[in-house]
Every structure is written in structure tokens, then in C-alpha cells.
Image (cartoon, rainbow, N blue to C red):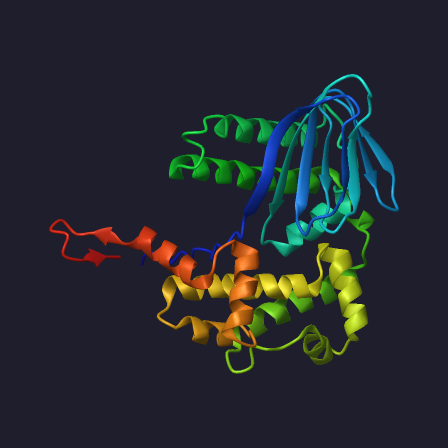
Length: 303
């Protein structure tokens, strides 16, 4: 009898934006900012000062790297008033909440020294993506975008494996109890978003009530472990559900708005455009164009 092998469900939720390599003049300074995503930076020439609000000022030299956690207020500047500096950076996010919590707790917001395995992983990743992005005519073609996505996925895999190899997980800045509470919150949110079409307009307070914890405690623990607010995560899950429904279902946009808990289609359209840069109807047209293949006699299409 042939052995049955079950394949895992894969939904990486990989997101990348704002990446570039830049040489800046002496005295360069970038204003205070924060993001809901991770920021990876490496230095190839000169010295950068990264100031973490309510934290240290981190000096980064050639070969050094830093991963800045979501929701971290920070500024970056060229340490020298005269000498140019060259850096590379990338903003990214991904779906795996366990890896996210370990990355925030054990690696983020600290200097990753040149010569270390982690620094090499960071510098090699940004160098590879810079190379793949160097041809303006090819940068957005499908094969090139897939190559960039694979590079970023390999980065996440390699960083996670290196954390496993060198880090003492007892040094995580949250307790086992907090980790369990945060995980229970994630599972509850995902179940409500994806499996409860009867009452999709839930809020975080309801989730906490059913888990027997206060919403204030739940909010603090969630952000401590995952680096993002519960509301951000709920909205992200709803947005991803909306994407799937727009791509694969025949529900009207008004029905989809209801299924993801939006008060009305106007609120849904504004929120969807905030996340994707396009309206739900435009998104549906784009994805269906990509999936449609014209038949030989051009009398129709198949999917």
C-alpha cells in the first residue's frame, strides 16, 4: 500500500517595500520614524548612528547590520559630517508569528557585528536583492520578482536557523506564560476571522473576554511578544481574507465587506485601498486578468 504524505498549507504573507541602496553625503540625517514592519539595514561604507527611542544609540560600521523591530521609533544618521556613507535597507513583513516573536526578542534593535554569521546573512541578502533590482527593465518581470521573493524567504529561514543555533531562548523578554497567552490570542483571532462568518464584526475585547483575560493585559502581551498591536493583526487577517475572496469567490464586493466585518462597503473600500493601494474592484479585475488565458480561437477564456 502506498504511503500517504500530507503536504503543509503554505501562506507566507511575505511583504516587502521601500528597499534601496544609497550613498549619502556627510551630515546626512533621516527624521524619526517607525513602521508596522521590520527594517533591515546594512552598512558597506562609512559609519551610521541608529538612535532607538528610550534605548541605546547604536554605531554601525562596514559589514555591520541591524534589524529594527516593528513599532520602534528610531533615527538614522551619518556619523561623519564630511565623509559619505553607503547603506542598504529593506522593509519587510511575514506571516509566521513564532519566528516574528523570536526575531523581535532575540535579534532586533541591536548591532549585528561584521564577521558574524547573522551579519553575513543580512549583507548577502541585500546584495543579492540589489543585484536583482539593478536592471530597471527587468526588475518587475515575474521571474525576477520570484527570485527576489525566494531570496527574502531564504533570509528568513537562515536567520531563524541561526537563532536556533546560537541563542539561549531563556533570554527572551517575555515569559512562557506570556508566550502562551499571545499564541492563544493569535489562534482565536485567526479562527474568528476565517471561520465565523455569522459574527465577523468582533473586537479584541471579545477575544480577551472568551480567554478570561483583561483587554489591557492582552494588548500589552500581544505587542510585547509580536511587536504589533492586536488591531493591526486583526485588520491584516481581514485584509488577507478579503484578498482570497476577491480572487477566488463569486461573492459581490458588498458581501465580502460584510464577511470581513466592515460596517459598510465604503469603510471596506477605504481600508482595502489603505493596505493594497488599490480598490477592491480594481484588485479583483487585476487578479482575474492574470488568471485568464485566451483560447486559441479567442472566443473565450479558461482558468
